[in-house]
Image (tube, rainbow, N blue to C red; front, side, top):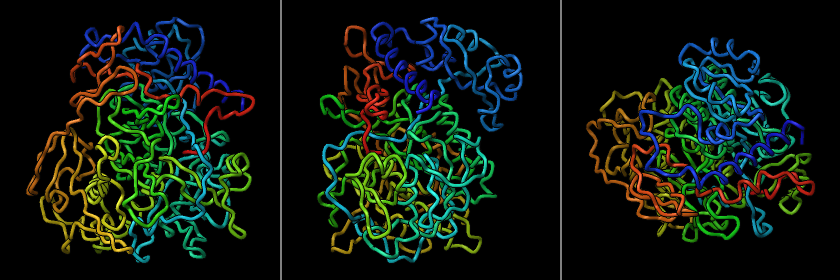
Length: 604
């Protein structure tokens, strides 16, 4: 671990400690300002500013439109030139003493200041060594016999890198960790990105059906944003996302996979990582994000809600939780993996995840010299001359979903001569509409249901995106039932989670205004000709770890005395993880000589 990364981990622990130690004196929802007076500092920086510390903190400074240069000039002695100076972000990265944060926020040219938070691939703890050495993913997903492979679809994997290997041919590879985003030779010293990429495309999958990838025909573009320990900076991820947006046409990028994240520290509207995701979606890129692995309390095993990480709280992203399929062909024994993060999101109370997908004990390609392969021999699956590992986590669920999305885009383009594909919002709606609900599981745990690749592909292949707005855009009839090879029939959810409601009916069969790229998912929309039945989402009174509670569409904070405070939508920034719903986060970010990964193990 480098000296800089050691600081990164120690600072992450310090932030967690600051949040925890000061929660009892700053959680009164009754005294929080209304939405009109949003603070310029995120909650972690507010706490640091209150300590008046001399220690420098690395922050992302978002300037008001067109004033980034002025802010940089004014803070030239503190700015880190070239770290994050993208026109799309209108932001820069700076190191400032904690005691100077309020002065920086007071600059009228500054719109917002956020912690350049540590991000990493998702890991938690598997209690047993995997006993399974094959994938039943493709039969379980109900994928057809290979008519679509993702050919012509570009997928950018933003992760720890991708190893140089004939099994994972890349169209391009950019290193944002060591080479400032330069085009360079593929590397992945950690291994996580290779495993994610291998589940999307594996060149050798034709040799053994047990290890087939989901979309073997896609064009992979690797973007390294995490280091040899699987960690990095938020600003590095943002820079890569904006690079993908700016070079979308040249590189042919249709999908971005983000199997990484950090604790939510502010509303989605000011979270710079969330806003980078929203920019990508507006540019026409489908963004698939892992929900996070904070579904249970690491200390006592209690189920927890509101564990979605950023940028999984991005409204327009496809946020994916994990299903444990038990590696069987039947879906009757499927269940949401206990580590999978549940919704709603902090601050905004968004309904997340959007769907869940296979994410436990997933077998994919792995580099032999990577840290994961060397440190965790029990998880290896060596087949002849090829090397695989079985890993678990919402990272894996996201990669499976990304592969299915690539197939959907190819199928959609095949419906029209112009080869126009579905918009990101339409892809998300189809995934939810065709998902298969898991009986007895609430919406904050499974979203609309479990990924149904066959159903999503059938629906996507029946839609002509070139038809005018308001028109029925199905080119053939669709039956909302999927039949598996084992004889099981799966009823689709036929619902879409939109804002504060669950919508049902024929809305996906019509080219509605909601499916346009310019629409932020969940925003108010006037529905056109579709038959839509809407019901308010009722979360009930689910207890979150600690004394916080989910009530209606608002996540409520806790008072100093531990009582529940009934906030309102206006109390927008009182929604803060003062209950420390993250469970093992601070422990996971602790560096130890025995295990530099802290208590992380291969659940990603």
